[in-house]
Each structure stands twice: as C-alpha cells, then as structure tokens.
Amino acid sequence: SDEGFPPPWLVPFLVPALGGALFGFDIGSSSAVVRILGEKTTELGKLDALALGQVASGSLFGAMAISAVLIAVGDKIIGRKQELRGAAVLFTLGTVIQSFTANLGLGSVLVGRALYGVGIGTAMHAAPLYIGESAPDNLRGKLVSLKEAAIVLGIVAGYGAGAV
Image (cartoon, rainbow, N blue to C red; front, top):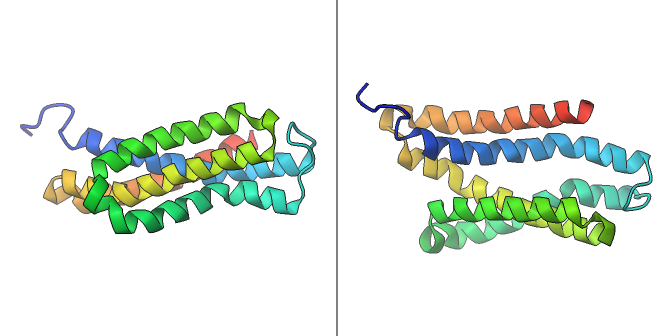
C-alpha cells in the first residue's frame, strides 16, 4: 500500500473509537461503583436505592439530553470534528468533578456524571459519521462496526476492573 504508516484513516478512527470505549467502560464500571456505594458508607454517606439509581443513570441522562439537542444543531452548526473535541473536554471535566468533589456531596458527583454523559452523547452522535466520512470507501462499514466493538470492549473492561 502507498499510504505509509500510520494510514491516514487510522487516527480519525481511533479517536472516536476511544470515545466508544470510554462509554462502554463507564457502563461496565458503574455497576461496581453502585455495588460498593450500596454496601458501604463512603464519603457520600449510605446511599438509598434512589441515590444509587441516580449515580448509575446520571451519565445516561446527560447523554440523552445532549443527543436531542445535537440532532437539531450538531451537524449544521457545530460540525463533527468540533463535537468530538468538545466531547473530550466534557469527558475530562465530568471525570475530574466526579473524582475530586465527592467530599462536597452527592450533588457534585451527579453533576459530574451528567457532564460526563454529555460528553458520551456528544461523542456517540458524531463518531459514526466522522468515521464514515474520513474512512476509505472499502473500510467505512468495517471501521464503524469496530467503533461499536470498542464500546463492547469497554463494557467488558469496566466489568473486569470492577471485579478486581
């Protein structure tokens, strides 16, 4: 092949695929976090079933909310590359808030979960189209499918991390 290494489609595939893996890891690892929070008294105190459900689903609410917005304005106003950049910032901010503000209470953790979820929704909105547009014709379907496989791999890794 005349492409050289790395091929020009590799980085535009790996970045959104990493977003998929992070999404999957969040799904898998959340189960362990919820289990730990339900069994023990932590910095957040003893959490009841409602609070545990909020922790587990907080990122999904953020993802759902931003997905509804991006359907209308994402492609027309923001663009997929900018969406992916924004998703990376949101993933990072959400993670930092969840990690370093638990001592402020459950509300701060839920804000971090929702912000992380906005990053998830943003990445999952833009990723398949971005991969499809940047991949060579003969690899488009395969690379979009591999991004989905990255989500599943992330789920398995998250459950594995929770089992340790």
